[in-house]
Length: 111
Image (cartoon, rainbow, N blue to C red; front, side):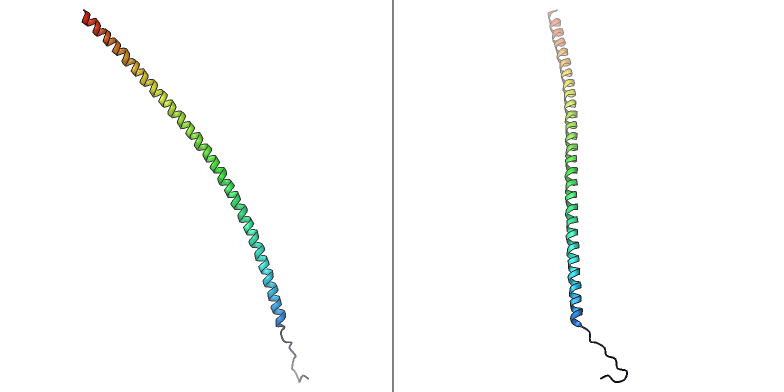
């Protein structure tokens, strides 16, 4: 029996606290696993998007480079044709002058 002012305090139920702690731990682990899986999916999705963007940009840059190359080839061909035409014109002029000089020489030597 209790004497005077003595109060009966129940002993803590450690098993209950341990089970609660284990339950909370398992719940936090499940939440963390779920968040991890969600983050992995987000990262995979972003990676795929980045790869697609990079591929798209690469294809665009290749097209630009090809276009620039074709333009440069056309410019080079045009310059080559112009210089070749100028060289031929100079050559023709030289041949005409040579022919005139030969005729003039022949005319002088027969006089």
